[in-house]
Length: 477
Ligand code: ADP
Image 1 (cartoon, protein in one colour):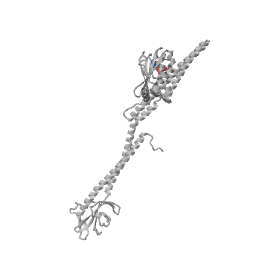
Image 2: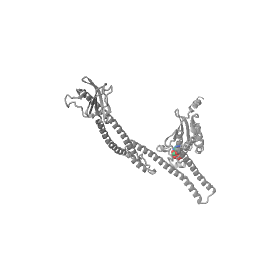
Image 3: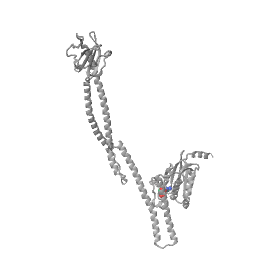
Image 4: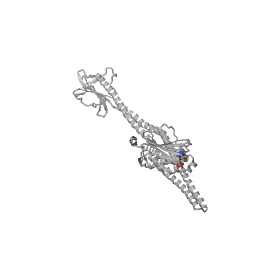
């Protein structure tokens, strides 16, 4: 059998009821104890007062015994329920009240009894009645007697019992009311969770735009809902990006494939000379090249996305890396009679993955070549940017990028002028790969450009740890 309640609401109520029951029981116990102590104090007070009253009423009888006499009949009459005994110190009984019905209040007195201030104590009569007893020594005329006065404690226990009954009767009612109230409160407090769960169940990949409705964004559940909605927002953005990426990638793949097919189909329609066939094959290979580059870029980006790229860092002068990158694109620049100038401090070291960062610079140079007029000059400059940074600027004097496009050029598949850039062979992935590579090395990339006046891409990278030492050594030479 399952004892643990399944839902939070019942568990909260159960805990609430248990704690309340415990507190009530504790409260009942403490209250009963206080009541008992205060009742008994009153009881003892009365007992001691009555002890004095009875002392004043004792009178010696001619037969040597003792009797009780009241100066005003009925005035200080000992209360009903009083038990009185008077003993001589030698142990002979001088008086016993009728209420005792021949039972003794404790037998012959001991030698010390009643000598000190009277302190009430509890004892039992032979018939089992619990009594509160006080005794004192007194002189009746010239005879020394031990006087004992006792009350039955029954009244005290009865009052206590009645109090206990009231408590016991109220206890289940209080617990029941607390349980019902607690359950209702818990239900009301947790109701937003139910509604959130129902709404969350309906959210699927197709409905990622839905959000949980939040009644009060300030309370705990409201905050939870806000966090959940935030997470949905991020998921939606990631999903949208993925969908766009897939759609763009398929589009980019389809274009060269369509070109290959139509070139092939046209070539097959008629008999052609070997030179013409060679031309057809040449243009097919061009498209295959484009496909290969695209596939490589996609692969690089998907590796970057999954975070599977392990950077093989080495300390290397940034200027040397720029020269290596420039030699990769040298042929392209020569084709357009462009000049790539590289300047800067050869001692400035970066700790980077050589191949990945070189590709990032190649992409920048490739763009600079593509989007600059023939015969123009491209400048690569390496310099320090404060104590901890290095800047690598790639500056061209080409078409520039209109300011409305600048925020998006690092996005995947983003091209400023689709028709023109496709002719140049770009798929809009180069800058996004470059940005990933730079950021993976703890740097960032910025763009400054004016339409018609060229562009400057600035890569900032952290200086390698000990390059400042090597630089000061270099500087002193
Ligand atoms: P692509 O492979 O098409 O060049 P990139 O991601 O490298 O893709 O660049 C994105 C777009 O930014 C390009 O299509 C081009 O329009 C623009 N762009 C990039 N670099 C330059 C530049 N140096 N001068 C002018 N436009 C540029």
